[in-house]
Length: 139
Ligand code: CMP
Image (cartoon, rainbow, N blue to C red; front, top):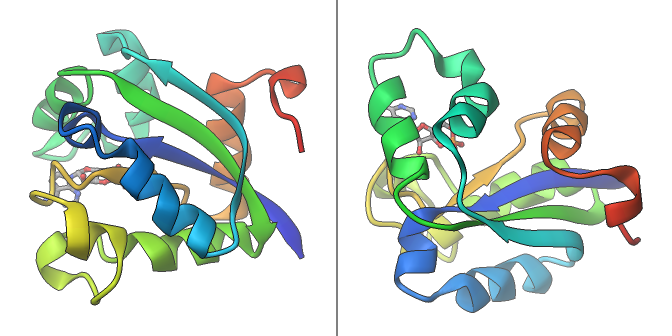
């Protein structure tokens, strides 16, 4: 079914000026950008977004990394968008990511892994609402 997912192009990708390269993988997979903005997250925004990871040992480093430079937040639309984008991204750790995925080809490390994508349709709806108003999404 036609679905939406939420994506973040992370600071390691904006720093290296490869957001267009990342987008080429997204579009090649048949996903469409229906909303997009460039933001420099505040500490509060990053902590709130990743609240589910609050107790994890990597939480503080993750937040520091996510506010270390601008990000591009996106809403992607397509058939089975959540699963499709997870496939295109590849495994969280680029060392384990399959050939041809964004993380295998472009990511620097498990932390600087270039992209975030929602893990389920319910999370996608929450994550989209965290950054976008309905009228900012143009399908
Ligand atoms: P993301 O999909 O954005 O969700 C949480 C992020 O934490 C994850 O991608 C990784 O970039 C980051 N992270 C850093 N260290 C780890 C780790 N040891 N295990 C899982 N995620 C990690």
